[in-house]
Length: 89
Image (cartoon, rainbow, N blue to C red; front, side):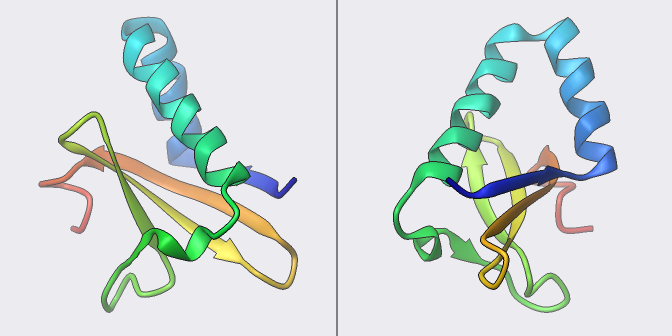
């Protein structure tokens, strides 16, 4: 089992989602479990510069979850969840 960390902005977004949109919140949590428990985390799409240290996963069509994987510590850091038009800014 990998260790997990959440970014500050992602924590705020998740609190809002839990109150306003439980369906999307549960989809995000399921995606967290899928990423943490997958055998090969490198199948997720790597990003280009300047976000080259992050990987991305699409959630519910138009939203993107950015995360980073630290192989040395076996740690997944979930960083940001935004609409795909805003996430790369």
